[in-house]
Length: 149
Picture (cartoon, one colour):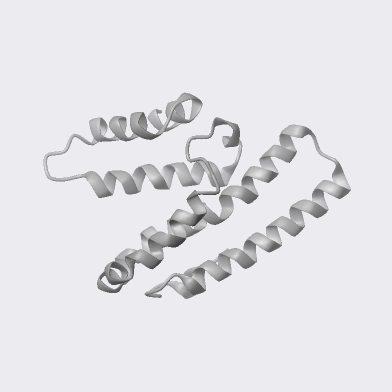
């Protein structure tokens, strides 16, 4: 979904509604596919994870990019932006090896790691050590190995 028309929005509500609309469309398409094709359990799990991680990944990516476009307004409205992120992240597990086949999940992992590094970096920081600490704090198993590679 192209969210560029919401760039420079100072509040998250329009972009979140667009993401919700796309989720409804994705869910309908997934249900139609499942009822028509009767895929394997692995394919079903992958579709479920794509649907589950679509909104958190798209919102998080948009939010983290948009904060640079509307700097002061973003900071002023941070509680509204963060509240939506918190509600979306409450529906998923960030450390979830079972979701690894999902593109949305892997994109969310990459975005999360990048944004945590941005948030925590300061002059003189060893970026490799910082990344290792973030991974150790938030991830285990296959997910940690993927992010560490």
